Amino acid sequence: MKRALLVCLFTATAIVTLAFLALPIVAIFAHTTPGHLLDQFSNPVVRDAFVVSLKTSLIAQALIVLLGTPTAYLLATRRFPGRPVAVTLVELPLVLPPAVAGIGLLAAFGRLGLLGSTFDALGIALPFTQTAVTIAVAYVASPLYVRQAIATFEATDPNLTAASRTLGAGPMRTFFRVVLPLARGGLIAGLALSFARGLGEFGATIMFAGSLQRVTQTLPLAIYAEFDRNFDATLAMSGVLVLLSVALLLGLRIGLTWQRSPSKRSLYLFGPSASG
Amino acid sequence: MATLALEEIVVPLRTFSLRLTLDIESAIALVGPSGAGKTTVLRAIAGLVRPASGRITSNGEVWFDAAKGISLAPDRRRVGLVFQDYALFPHLSVRQNIEYARHHQADDYLDRFSIRHLERARPPDLSGGERQRVALARALARDPDVLLLDEPLSALDAHTKAGVRSELHDLLRGLGLPVLVVTHDYEDAAALADRVGVIVDGELRQIGPPGQLVAEPSDPFVASFTGANLLNGYGERVSGVTRVRLLDGTVVTTADDAHGDVVLAVYPWDITVSTVRPNDSAMNLISAPIRGITELGNRIRVSIGPVSAEITADSFERLGLKVGQTAFASFKATGTRVVANSRSGSRPKSGLGSPRP
Image (cartoon, rainbow over all chains, first blue to last red):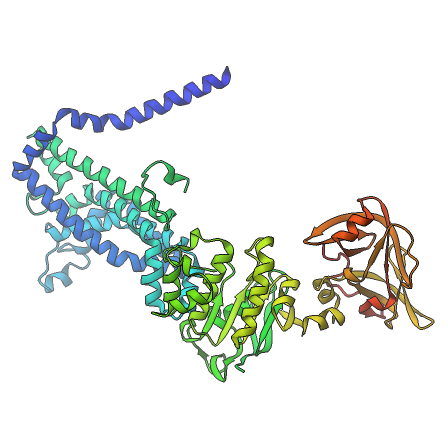
């Protein structure tokens, strides 16, 4: 009797939780039809925001992968004094309020900032440019990729890299032919998370890059700007972000499935992968 | 014949240092308990661990010299290392694993190790025995100057092991390379190598042909590791033999000369088991209830009082032995060896008391 009550209680809690999480998503699509959503792409504000978001995200993620991967490998495989500090530094943007990150970037790269005069001398002005958006996104999103990459590299069997070396492969060949292929799934998962975080970036971007249509106005910034002017456009842009997020979540699942079983790639995304 | 030489290499480990000087020309096995530093020897030779001092040369080529600051990277030493878990690349097929060591010539090795039918398979789908053959093929495809095997038989089940052991024995003989095998199993070591070294806490206690280690163990640990029963007692010389009074009061006679606290080694296969008092020339007779019966393949190990005997499954059936039943264990005075003798009265510390189960 008591047990049945407990099961009922847990089930009810789960239903409430899931409904609470799903309701806002459902509401966005309840307000707008797919056709209506596509219509909104003729709205220049929506179109521009979409292009700015995509462009800055792609460049930012490319930078994160190029710089973050070697950094993560170093932190995962080497033990040196100050390593805990380095790891904390990598994780810092994750807990930093985005607005604070934006102020920090402004204080570092702004005209009156720490590196402002250096950049000025070189004729570079960062704040309120598309480059500033890219930097803000990279700063805020990077921990999600680098953390996952460190965890993935740490999980790579050190005997496999040792075996590669004894078979005559140098450190570079070992990295590209053994370490990277084995870490691929985990890295893709980290990239998916980082991409999703970057797409939703708001606070740091508005502080450091402003919200200029066609230049620095990303989808989240445009949603905020259009909020009291054109609610349909807001809904359309929100719909786009929901779809992108779901796509990235699927990418994350696929990445993690790959990571678990490099030999047998499961076609299931949610089900049996958890056990394998 | 090619030679790998280790000259006074020292590798500090957590609680002791590995110290080793060894010339390897044919197949040598290092045997010792886990944590004795065996794997570290292999990793030092392969360049995966850097010794604090010493020299490692292969056919005169210096791979490591602490004094001169020379340490070749692992990929510059010609070493074939077969890892305990084989360390096959799980994302590559069998063929690709072998090609990783040598391009374009994987076919020779696929044929030689009878793994051509597996060339497209990936390591996680292979059995233990198959993985081992792939790992050996890959290590040899590297065309090494020395072959190193880390516990080559420990990942195999008992059924596969016997067959693989004789295959491996033949293979190692035919290579004409210095081979170093490390294992915790004395029988495996004796089956695979011409010479066996017993290593404990980083120190080589004794090295020699397997038969010599059994016949003349240098200390109680070597004796116990090669499978002997160890008996502690106090010995006195009486009319040309030594009588040893054991802790439980039993008196055992040995042909070896000793006086004072002694440790005797008796091999299980030198002990005869019977259910009635035997009438033979053996001078030593122990009568006690059977403490335990363990099956070891086609042999049965029977523990009687302070000793364990090994008899065939046939004899075991014929005698109809059961745990708790009183039985007789007899062995000759010449079947015992004094492996430690301290006249002062203080007993040697290591390996005393319990023989291997």
